[in-house]
Amino acid sequence: MWPWGHLAFGYVCVSALTRVFAGRPPSDREALLVLLATQLPDLVDKPLGWGLDLYATGYGAAHSVLVAGPLLLVVLAYAVRKRSVAALAFVAAYASHPAGDVLSALLDDNPAALSRVLWPVADLPAYGTERGFAERALHYFAAYATELADPTALAALAAYASVFAAVGALWLYDGAPGTGLLRDAERRARRR
Image (cartoon, rainbow, N blue to C red; front, side, top):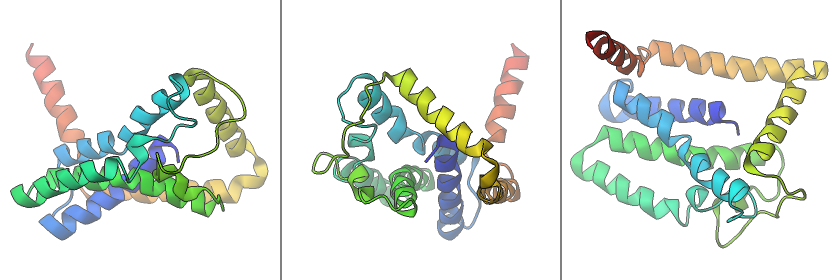
């Protein structure tokens, strides 16, 4: 799943969660936590796997329910104890990332879908080609761009775009959370 897919999936999860537990849409702070937490597993594991070769692939400790899972349980316990919707939003957004990776792999009929989140017990097979971090990222992005440019994939592209349009509409319906932080930063910058 691409970063924007993780962000969209995580935002939907957190929007639903804040409505159920707080009776409101996400706050600016919670929206910022969604942005950070949905990307965190890849920001940790991709450089460690692709750049430093600590993992055979880009999936490791930060994606693992065996490693990240217990840490998220600690944050969840804090969220419950302090009644912190922000901490709960962080847990939901972070957990949506490995869940999204597994769901995406299952939709692609990938038999190793669960291996993505079971490091160090299970690991995906190593890549067939050695590439550095930047080269691997560019390789995946070029393959993605080629898929999008394929005229036979227009229906899939329309479905893909409609999902993001729906999430964008939800974000607007929620009051565009996160933009308040940008307005505040702009005001502070103008005062200087």
